[in-house]
Length: 184
Image 1: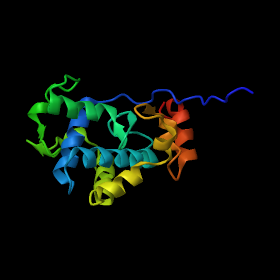
Image 2: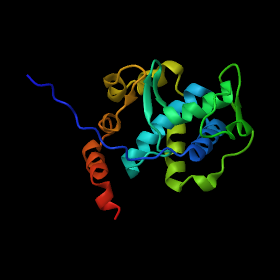
Image 3: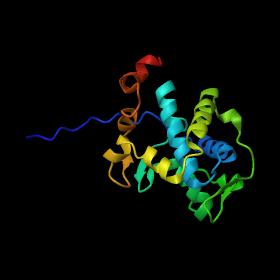
Image 4: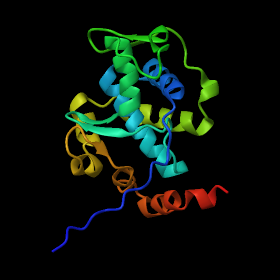
C-alpha cells in the first residue's frame, strides 16, 4: 500500500525581520510576563488569530516544534542574536532590547507602530489579553495543539497543520490556496 503524502502549501509568506523586531518589542512592553517563553507564545497565538481573521501571518515567520511548544523561527533567531551574539538578518536588534539571565526581555525603546497594521495590533493585543496571564504550564498545554503534536521535535510545523487548528480552517485553507487569484 502506498503512503499518502500531503501536498504542502507553498511558502506563502516572507519573513520580515524588521517587523518581527517591532513585534517582539510590542509584546515585551505589554505582556505581564515579558520573558522569552511568553513573548514567543503570545506571537504564536497572535499569528493564529491573524490567520483566522485575515489569512496571513503577522511577520511571515515559520514555526518550529521545539520541546516547549511552537517557536517562531525568525523571531527566535533575533532573540538569539541579542542573547548570544549569533548574527542574524536583524543586526540592530541589540540596540532595541536585551534578554537578561532570567530570560526577561528588557526593551530599550517603544515599538515602531508604523511597521504594524491595525489588524496586527488587534491580534497582538488579543493574544496578550488571552495568554499573557496564563501560567507556564497552561501556556505550554495550550500551545501543544494538534499542529505541534503532528510535527517531529525540531522540525518545521507545516502551515497547513497550523491552519487546520483554526475554527474556520476550510475557509482559510481555501483562501490561501487561491490567494494569488484573490489578490489580483
